[in-house]
Amino acid sequence: MIQKLLKKETAVQSAGIILFFRIVERIIQTFRGIIFARYLGPSEYGVFNLAFFFIPLVVSLAKFGIPSSYSRYISQYEKKNMLGDFLKKNYLVTIGSSILITLFALIFSKQISFLVYNSDEFKSIIILCAFSILPYVLYENYFASFQGLRVFKMSSLLRFSQFLIFTVIGIVVVMYYPKAQSAVSANLISFIVVAIVFGYIVRKYVLNSNSQDVKIQEDKSNLNFFRLYYLIINS
Image (cartoon, rainbow, N blue to C red; front, side, top):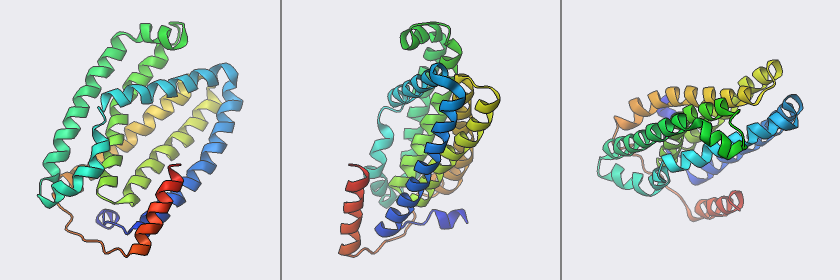
């Protein structure tokens, strides 16, 4: 089943998969936002949103922009039968930088809390954010790898799995304990779960297989449709 999911798709299939998951995510996201806003209240909801501003900012520093290069270079390394080595080296670099930045954030959590919230009472939020860095970076690596391999079924499934786990756990814990820590903790759990599950899939089926040896035949109409769709969703 995993091997079937890892087969490359045509442009039209990829566009359909992405569109379907995006629509479902938007619907669920609206529902989740309403629940969070009602139970957290203005103050805690503001703390939660600032945390979600801080996490991607730090993650972007930890990954050095490396995953963004996968879509360009993965196909080249597949042809050279060096895909596994290429991904392993890049994963190790981003993991190392993530650990260093995590340690920095933990050591200076009090100061960062004051910088972000103008108060050191949210140190626990910063600590949760710090522990989110490594699984988040792994998530970004896996997501970019699947897209570079042109298996949008897996990249969409990865994204949706994290999104759904965060939504379900987040709503439950926020209803019972309406604090920003609850939502941030749910987000951390969701990234840890998908990093472990999809990390196993990547290690077994991608890193140990240098090339998929699959050629996709596209006609010009499919490619033109895909280009138009890509421009629309990224506008």
